[in-house]
Length: 170
Image (cartoon, rainbow, N blue to C red; front, side):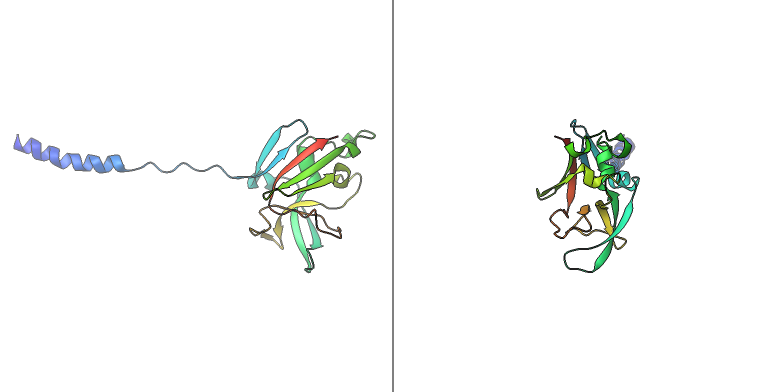
């Protein structure tokens, strides 16, 4: 009996240690960087991996008195297309002026673009949702996403810390 009791006392501490061991933490899903909402209210939640699969362009532009820099990102028109806005040959006569794109920032700032400004079939302004400047990811002050609108005299529509894009129709 004493041998059984000693065996039991030795076994319980080992079992207690085994029970306190925690399972590995679950792998977190990649964070949503941008929500793109269409005119019908359908929302796409895009991660960095989703954005990396979209067509990209590079533009050179000067940012508020600084020397021109290279900015890389997604044409804003491509994101409007994802939200269901008609571009190029899909535009019917008189339809494009009725569409708009609102860019929303983390701090509540909003900027507005007419869809015709973003459609290469109308003009080529090169307005981008950028995630890289001079080949490096944007810092916390500007990023992770920002709008760059080259050629604008005032940078009121160069939105920083972009979190959402809404496409609508008048």
